[in-house]
Length: 224
Length: 320
Image (cartoon, rainbow over all chains, first blue to last red; front, side, top):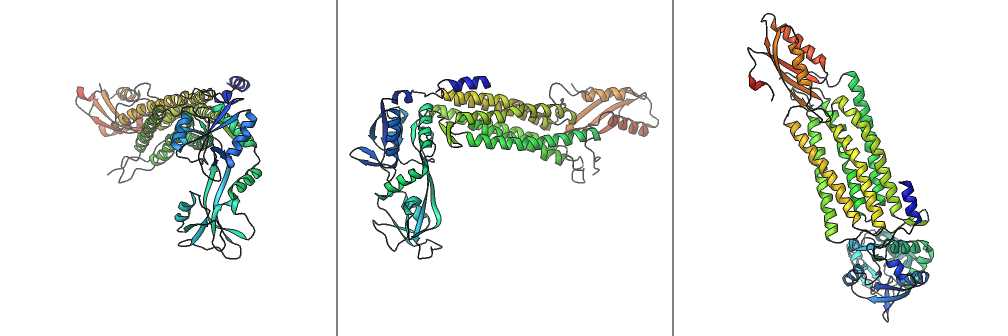
């Protein structure tokens, strides 16, 4: 048994069900994208933001050129299943409801969603009925705030109000975090299910990234 | 009501029971750790998931044994004049039903996965600062779960007949089946790694079928035990020879012309009746009392015997 395992380790193992890694190397990497700032932004049909930046870095290592494919979630999950695209980046989290249809990567970043208040004031004990500022276009925040009974207000600039967002974007002088932590998110990417070697290559790339610089990248993207 | 005597095992069997209980505690702890290991590494592999549940469910007979042997040792009382020996049979039925339910559940899940065309993907796992193929830790977990099961199974199978404990025996059989199940899981994981994703749910289905088969067989035995079928040996290989031996023992007494014996099983022990045709009619109460005591001394499992003198043996009283 041990000898058989050693043999496995020596040859090309694991393998892809549909040979994606072999095809993409030195070829084309087709990437499905869905707008989900700051993780994915779409400008002129091209992917920008945290995840497309990471994908571009990986494609460079693989010697592949990236083709961006836009679409809805269901559409792109099906395209992935039919091998019409190779990779899906959409600000996915490890608990995505499409999990069983996808080959999910290891979480490349874990983030916490929190509320920050001015360091000069005591954080409130209870958020019931309180107004909390959020950046416009952040789809997940209103629901998280309403769970606490707080009232989300979309504002570009906030001064007096408490503000909700990712921990890394609220780390600023003059602000302090208040309880509770609204959510903990594990960010992942997805490949076609059954593509073991391709997914392992992606996991290896994501695992090699420097966490600190990833957080800086996320903070920079969130500030745009 | 007149309670039966407060006795389960003679000292030698009591020592075996203590060893069996220690063994069961060890295996419950070990299985829990193996299940935790499988859970941490399982990812999206259906075979790994099935293996995890198989481990969780395989704790049930062990726990049933630990609980039921405790209950069975309780003294007979006014409310339970026959003692609580039957608890072993109930525990055995519960353990067998748990096996059936889990087998069906996992078989359904594997089938659903194939029908939905959900392909298993095994990618990387971050471990101590590097990224390795997640299949390797899975295989280590499978080996950890499978290999010691062989040893536990052997030890339990050798103890079970000594204290005539069917739960312990069923548990031993399950542990023996465990390593085969783990081997199937390993094939599923490696198969998925080669891109044959369907090998994963297929391995899961085979493991679930095996669990289901064990469950059905054990439910059958547990139910016939509870309906007091003619007793079988602990390993179910053949009918128990004790009734014949008691019949011979009675017929060897000089005052007995012929005897017929009927025994029923209550957990570890037997209760029963013997019909004897006496050659003489003087001093019968003393002779019967001595015969009962001799029979009890003959085999510790014979918990109580009622001897009834009759004029002739009716055919209906001889077991067919």
